[in-house]
Image 1 (cartoon, chains in turn orange, green):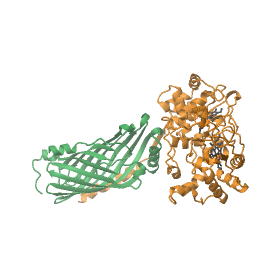
Image 2 (cartoon, chains in turn orange, purple; image 1 turned 60 degrees about the horizontal axis):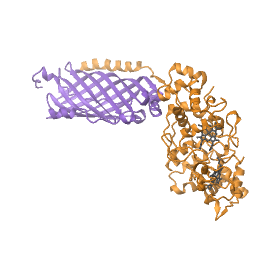
Image 3 (cartoon, chains in turn green, cyan; image 1 turned 90 degrees about the vertical axis):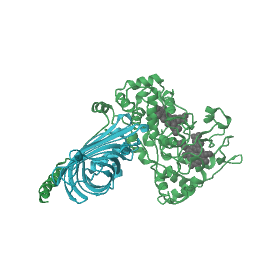
Image 4 (tube, chains in turn orange, purple; image 1 turned 90 degrees about the horizontal axis):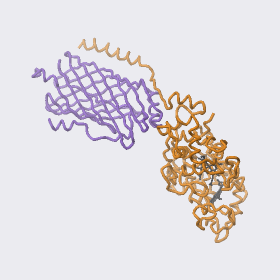
Amino acid sequence: MKRVFHFGLPLVTSLLLLTACEQKPDFEYYYYEPEDYALLSQYLNLPQRPDNYSTKLPKHLEAQGLFARAVDQDKAILGRVLFYDKNLSKDKKVSCASCHRQEIAFSDDKPVSRGVFDRVGTRNSIALGSVLNFSAYYGTDLFGPSGIPFFWDNRANTASEQNLATMTNPVEMDMKHPEIVDAVKAQPYYAPLFRMAYGDETVTIQRISEAIANFVNAIGSYRSKFDREAEKTIGTEVWSNRERLNFSGFTPAENRGKQIYLDNCASCHSPLQGRPMKMFANNGLDATITDKGVGGITNQPAHMGMFKVPLLRNIALTAPYMHDGRFATLEEVIDHYSTGIKPHPNLSPELRLGSQPRRFNFTPQEKSDLIAFLHTLTDEELLVDKRFSNPFK
Amino acid sequence: MRRWLALSLPWVVWCACNSYYYAPNTLYTPHLIERHDAELGICGLRGSDFSGFEFHGTYAFTNHFALMANHLDVRGRSPSQDRRGNGRLSEAALGVYFPLRQVSNTVFVGAGTGQVFNEFPKGSRATLKFHRYFGQYGISVEQGALRIGTGIRLNYLHYREGHIDYRVGESDVSKIILIEENSPFIFPEFSVNLRIGSRPVWANLCSTIVEHERAKELGWATQTIGLGLLLEVDHFWRAERPKK
């Protein structure tokens, strides 16, 4: 028995000593090969630790069946560079970001966008702050069409289809597919990025557009004051009434504005800003239309003058408004709904009484309450989110 | 005997829906009574999402002292998700034993080294290497054709090296960062060993559980079950164990 202690004690002690000699963990994390990173760093500010583009939507959006689509991280990183790369345009002065500026929720402050050689388009740029929200619902995803989601006239089914249309559009970037591929091949920083995303350096138009689609699909707004308040109500009330509750973190004006919004606007623009209740509608902008909208694509008389119903997320930042940017301020938009709705055969039932356009006749108080509410839809974090910022030096 | 063999084969291919960064080997409680007692065990092992095998050996080289060696090899794979992983642990220990009639008390202290490796789509990998020191107390009781053992093991687990491709994904990277920040870990494990048979061959069923409150966050497997054979190899050079 004694021997046991004679041997045992030194054994335990030496074990303790051994553990004491252990060094701190030496963990090495890597993504880019060092020589790749050195090359990339000559042109780009990309973090050594890759950005994470996956999103967990807050509970009130998940409760409506909205789930962020899985985004391929490596393709999104490549997509970010492509999105900001002016080499992809004819005059090398225009990138996606020229008309979709992060600081204004990926919209453009001009009524109609200006593309290469200052050519003027016919439509107002759409803020991309909600692509994630759209893709989550409509399946405007990377995996194939299952809705009619992109553009004012809903003419592109998927984000890939959309971005190819833009790159080739003469008033936007004006490049043929082979020209885009060549422009990408010509830049030294793309070889490593393609390798990370696709395993090899082959540049194809499909890969380019898929990578951009991954990036664009990751852009989403879900961190606004409205979202924070709406999330708090989860579990406190039945589903259908949740948005009716006054939000404790809202000012009285914001809460009043919310009620006005729910009574008059939510039937199209969505009560919880999850997804639009209609894909497209006519909201009475013109008695005689000049832009056929969805009708121009489908050629159906019942679709003439109808346009995508946008989500109103970040709306305070994305002036001017409507498909042609006709309204410079939210006040003008609300005046339109208040007293300016024009008759049109396709005018949406929500905006008419019988055959006559509806007159909401908002009081000045109601107008300012509504505007106060619309300001709560701004996702400030998106505007400074580094993952979506310009990576070029 | 045949039937036991069949039972002991590693069974069912398993879905690796999770990746693990630690899996316990069986906390093995040998039944040592006297000098030259020697046990050799081979065991098919299974945890959630992985399976593997392990070897155990103990040898009583004096009347109170014994040596132990363990080796564990586990694998997980998920063809649908393009993921696979494996883990290894080898260790040696020195111990003392006190027989009390049909009861064998054993205490071992040991050290070992191991590694876990997980591979994800696009060939991205995370490999962690660790040392493990342990002290264990086990008790094994024999009653007819039955031996029941139970034990507690105190581990000092230290991850000393890691090579991690960020592309393994956010959820794994966060597990690994947590491991890096918190290593070393000191925690207990418990086991039950059930043996049926008679000298020199026993069928062996054992279960080991890990007790650590953050095991899930750390990506640890918290339980393994093993089924195997245990041979008292001393039988082959000693016809009869002398009666005590």
